[in-house]
Image (spheres, one colour):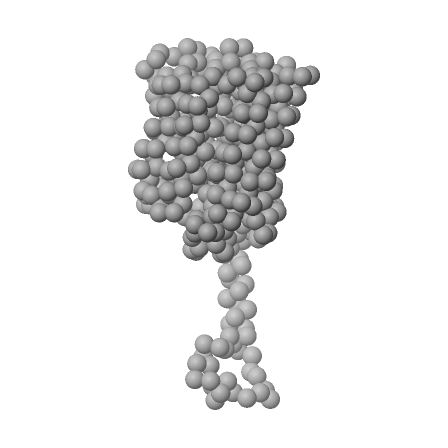
Length: 389
């Protein structure tokens, strides 16, 4: 019971409170330094909002780790924090100056190499999935770097509306934290819960804040991707993982994919759509699934809630059916994901077309209605053509 208190509950509370009380100061600093969002046709919000949420999350996470470090020591903690600072720095520069994708990818590669070289973070096994067990070092290096960069960019792309990236991050960190706790990896349970606490403190101001509302920005989304990638790699490396007596060894990679199902799915379908239409895969647009739900007139809160609950349901389903035939489970997951993506995109397209037709008919109808007993606007204002419907 003390392990649960020290590795999960206390660091979660400490990180959440530290992040919560640091945010008003960071909002003031962001306004003074003009670290604010850029407003354009693609952004979901049309007001300029402070962008230091990533730094608030980092402060909360560090507070939770440092306070509880005496109970469970995290190996090479300073190496991990240095890699996090690389992500925060490049993210802040991108928030302010809009860096090129190559510079961001280079920073992500450096952070991944720091974790690999100095903390020994790497994928060494696939738990028998597709007949693969232990993999050679050369393949391990490539796979590890690919997974870290993939998850970082998946979280970066998912940060498009209030509460979404933070909510997915909280869900992933808590699920992984419980998994570490159940497998007696209390050091990474501490890291997971501290990160979740930092995200919870940020989530409140991001979704419900008015005076002190702020966004995580690229600094926060890149940080979230780095931390989650570290956690999933370490969870994958547990020799005989157990999750509430439900998770056999061979389904660990599948559970990890289920935990990250929305960021991975959204990134995949966005890249496919951009390449299909001849666009560069790193050129921003409104092809994300959360943008399609917004087009259906859902609010930010409802859209984020739908996606987060859907992600949670996906995790639960994969845990329930974990003992089924693995190829069948993979086929079921892929079929479900493709069906949901196609349904959302087609329904959003149909809704948009019908709404456009109805609006056009309404405008044409109003133009044909004669106005009696009123002064002709053309006699009163030289630009009356612009004023008339």
